[in-house]
Image (tube, rainbow, N blue to C red; front, side, top):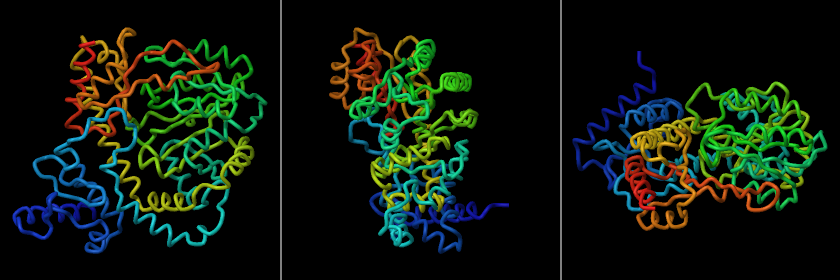
Length: 460
């Protein structure tokens, strides 16, 4: 027996077939056949908005419809969507921002309007230092899907993950230690943040072949100076690799042994398609992990909403510093995110983005495997998420390579800016790598872009 959303999807499919027979239909425009809005479908078929969304999701998974931001859903013709047709812009393998062509602007604008209506009282008051209680209750349930189980009082909504990192760097820890450890390479904004706050830091190498330098890590942990280690266990930025379960457990054992906290930046949790790949938090039995989650990669950076989940012992100190930094996080942004999650729109959008990025990364992996004699492709990590890196020989002039690719309409990024330039954490032993991000490259053009990259590397 078909479910309600499947019945609606079949009805919409029949409707599209009828419209294709009628070229003069009012539902045709320059982009093709435009389908009714989600809320119109919900009203017509007397169902909830989430059921209507599931109907469109069913059609989208079968490549029968596609979404255009600020326009709506359109019928797929000739097996492709408008977002990948007649692509005239450069192929941007450098940008890590979400794909703007698939963001549901109309839906999120609706959520903003609804938030304005439903949260009128809160908008004229300062919020709580933790965040909107109703949003935190919703996040507590959502985070359980990420295998992050915690009490509501352990959650803080922050103005992006950047604010959480600043608060953690500034706050005193129970151990009295003051130094921060980062991976080398690391999130490019972390070293400048620590330097601007006058927080001492050091680094430990994480490489494609060996992963973490465990000997150096334990030696520095044992020194007694490290208060926390900032780490990206999943889809490391920039090198893309993920830790194994054994590596996570080993790291936790060392953190417990030497009284070091672990700040887990799980910025791409929404793109994980391996059900067995749990966050570091899920393995923690000694309350050593501080979990950070961003919504900027799955929605848009301008939303500026991050979430921090803390061990109970650190909650008071974090709350004090956060309130000093901004009193509270934008109530309107929190309320809009709450509506977006509660309505089911977020889960729908996350599935679309995950599937879209996964299909692009599959093309990348196929290209890497197709040229086993070409060292940069052969040695590149076969990652999920949204990026990988091509390791290059030390003699290759990176600036020349980037410039030549740009002239051919290919934008790429190197990993140099992910290493600290100064201070104790700085290193001169930089691995030369090109970082390739697929979030803004149409699937049909990935092969073309990688072929041009390969050609230019061979020329050098």
